[in-house]
Amino acid sequence: MTHISVQVDGTRYEDDVEPRLLLVHYLRDRLGLTGTPIGCDTSNCGACTVDLDGATVKSCSVLAVQADGCAVTTVQGLAEGGAWTALQRAFHEQHALQCGYCTPGMIMAARDLLRENPRPGPDEVRQGLEGNLCRCTGYQNIVRAVLAASGQPAHEAAEEVTA
Picture 1 (tube, rainbow, N blue to C red):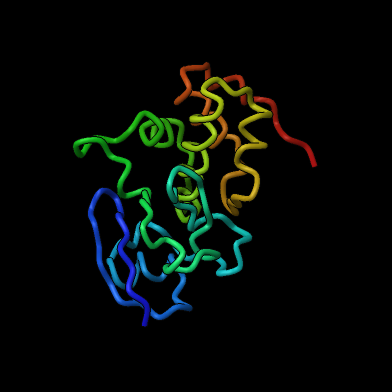
Picture 2: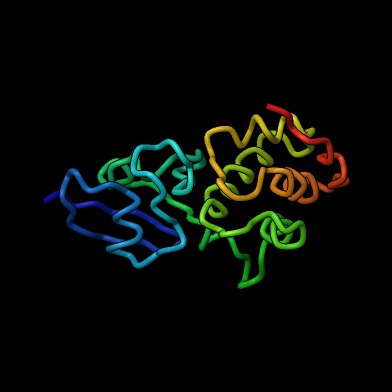
């Protein structure tokens, strides 16, 4: 067992963990933070994306011991005083989810994108969300939501993506 000290969503945790324990399992199984889903366990889908010391990471590809001494923010830690952030509201208002499984990872990736580029265009949003898969929506409303959260007209995402 390895002792870790990690701050998750503003709360400090001290735990002994197996060195091979993935961060996603630590968050879900030890801390009960089930808002971070396990999508693929291979880092392909991005559903488990969290913020680790200011950088987005796929928590299924990070060991809990690697988070020792770090701050982790999950989708559950985004609400400000119990109120949704503008990005969370935009996902709701733009109907940017169907089953919702990918939504936590999409929101975390979009948050990171908007920190780096507060006014992205539709193509920049698509590029910024690359690595986060959605099997339900076709991405159009997700792009609209990110544009709306950045204060831009969501209709700019209206052009369909062709394969």
